[in-house]
Image (cartoon, rainbow, N blue to C red; front, side, top):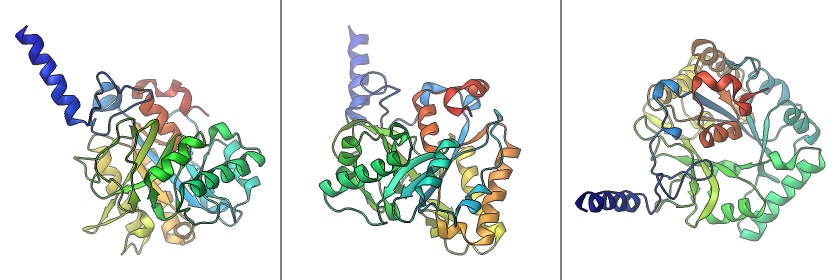
Length: 325
């Protein structure tokens, strides 16, 4: 009896510590993951965990930027498939025919905004996501594959945003930049809002406070550069050369890779891409990590989430369906 009571006490302490969320009982993959769960998904050994690098692009996608982005996505993942990323598209100013070609080529398409502004009411937020999703569908993009949201300026809108995500059949937000969980010892794996955290996680904006079962939060860890923090490469001061760009991206990559291999999410935007040395440094970084490491995969946000939902060993990833061409 004493052993049973001790076990129950341990369970109560664990569940209480995680705000009622327990990965052993009431929050399990593939559709639930606790915010405070620091374990590698699936309990894999670190040697079996791939380092996922998630390249995400925001705002307008048109012919001006197509040749710039195309220079990044020319190398292959370990399975021989070309690397891909996620575009969070602003409706106005984008060529949706071009967006469809990217979607047909294996890139993920998500929602940013209609015109670069953020709706302030729940109704307007719902309608914004509905409008962009419908316009993408009208352009011939499979709307069931439009799953993610990142609002402009990486400014999350908490419950307003997640209510709209739920009402529009979307899956995740990838715009919550955090300066709390941005170090090797405390990076976070994506988690769901089945049991929402009690603290605000987002540096610019707010995280959700209500329950949204099965809806995911992809945190974007602040980058560290020359002793300062910045939410994206474009927000880092003193990045003045191609070498600076490579060092910025690689040093923060190494912090993930040498730790618990939580996904490394990189935020790119058109202004960054239009600066020659910044584009060249980004290309150099992507080419290097793919050539130098056989356990690094450059994937879309949705591919990354599918790995988190169904953790798969490095040795089996060549046959992992979500990573196929």
